[in-house]
Every structure is written in C-alpha cells, then in structure tokens.
Length: 412
Image 1: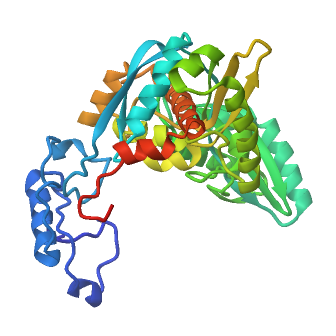
Image 2 (image 1 turned 30 degrees about the horizontal axis):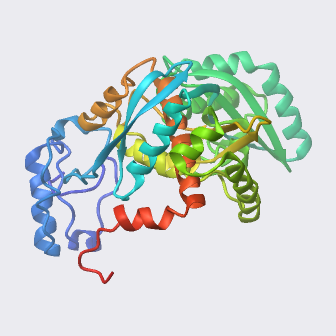
C-alpha cells in the first residue's frame, strides 16, 4: 500500500476512477506524525489555495491522536473563557468551581458568570446524580408475534447468563437490566449498563454484541438480530431517553430569595414565575426537548473544552425545568438533565488542552464522572437564571449588542 492510499488495509482495491482522483495523503505504517500532517496541509493548499497557517499552529503531539481522529491535518482553535466561581453543594462536586467554556458566542461567558454570582449569594447549587444508564438496543427477528413473545420470556429466564457474556468484554461496564418492547414479530431489547467514568457507547456496543451472540448460540431458534434496533437513539434526542435516562440523570437546584434576585438581576421572583408559565406553554407548543432557557449553550461549551463527544449534545441538552414560587416569595428553581452523556476518562478527555480543562475542575481521571455531571447541571442552571432575568429586564438584546458583535466587515 502506498503512502497516498486512503483506503483501509482490508478495503477492496480502488477502481480506475478512484485512482484518477487526488486522494488525501496517508501512510498506514506511520500516519500520526508531523511530517504526514504537513504533507496533508501542503496537499490541501495546492488544490484549494486555502491558507492553513492557523490550522497548522498547535502544541499537540500527533502521536497522541490514534483513536481520536484520522487524516490529522491540524487543529480548530476555539476560544476558552472561564466563568465563576460557581458554588456547588453536591454529592460529588463541593466547593467553588471555575468553569471553562469553549465558545465563539459573545456574551455567553459573561451571562453564565452573572448567574453564578447570583447562585453564590444564595448559598450555592445543590446537585445530585439520580440515575446512571447507558444502552445498546438490539432487535431480534421472528416469524410471528407469538414466537417473539416467547423469546422475551426466555431472555428473562436467562438474564444472568446474558449478563455474564456481556460483562466478560469489559472491566467497568455492568449490565443492570434488559428492557423489552415488541412490535409485530420484532422483539426489541434495550440493554442497560453502568459504564464507570467512560461515556460508554463503544463499551456497551461491544458488550451487547457478545450478549447477542450468546443468545443466538443458545436459544433453540438461533434467531437473527441487528445490533441496533434504533431505540437506543444514539446521538438523537428521544422521549424514551428523557423518561428512562441515557447517561446521567442529574438535578441541579437552588432556592433564590426575592430580595436577592431583585438586587442582582433587577427582576422579582413573581415575574420569573409568571414567565416560567408562559415558557412552559411555548415549550409544549413547539415540542421542545428542553423547557428551560438554553441548556445546549452551557453543555456545548463545556463539552468542547473538556474533550467530550460534542455530538452527544443532541441527547444531553434535553431536560425539564421545574420551579415553585413559595409563600414567602422565595423561588425554588431546578434543572433536571435526563440524558447527560459525559466522561472523565477515555475518548478525547486525555488530549492535552482537554485534560487541562478537566483538571481545572478537578475532574480528570477515574472516579470523577458524577462530579463533572453535577458541575454541568449547575452551570446550566446558572445560565438559565441569567438569560431569563435578562429577557425580563429588557437586557437581552442590549447585552448582545455590547458584547456579541464581532463583524468588522459587515454593516452595523
């Protein structure tokens, strides 16, 4: 195989048409080197005329990147700001935290900073991880519905053996239970795991493959199956995950006195509660995955900074805001993230700048994932408080005009 062949070692040989195309340089014998990265940049500059000076400026050793990227060419640099201190009184996250937020959206860090200030005055955020579950959801195919139903009973009877087959593939994954759903002659299994400090999609995929092979080899019908029947809804929002949890189900909550909210944000708890009722109706009408202000902003910025799989935002941002206006005027405000998928070990978390951000939070390595989940939820709560207050106080547009305009070549 030549150094410019972009095919995998076991791929079929390229066609004549493919040979005629200019392919991205690679060398399977040593692809993660600065020499290969430079060759790829030169290749792109020659064919597109693009200027890749900034893409080529980085401190990462390409030798660290196998398992994280292919055809490494350079980096996309995203500014990182820090908001805080964020006072958290959680089960795992306790104390003051300075939260790294990687974003290009002006006002974002300032807004979260303001919400964190308010929460600090109120004594901080309570945070709790209440459920933990990652899934892979195979489907087994039968001739008729009765056969599929009987298969479901067989799976229940053999759960211990299925669990043993699955857990033999992993040091950290633990199969907790198998949910079952039938449509016609199809029997969907939703196999649930805890995954330690890893996000766990790959872990659960490998474990469930072993479980399905054991089922096929030991069930008298040797049924056909597909490893994913799509009800695990990997990297897609779904209501089943909001109800049954995917990743971490984490709650952040605080009690905000009316006098404090008026002094810091310029709005009253009664105003905020009235707006919450309106926002609930709007979320219902639109079918929104989150009925708060903007969970995705905080989570995306934290994910990029700490090396999470950013595509998991599609699931992780879903959740429910629940509030109470108490008789003394205090405002109870909670955010429940139902499908938060985060990791402190594996994936992109060990890359240099991502590791630094996790270390800034005290969250790098094993035994830290619930701490990170609580910090994520508390940050979402801070941002929701700040944005909601800005809307009510008439500061939403003016703040973006002051801090969010970076268009020197565009008309005002």
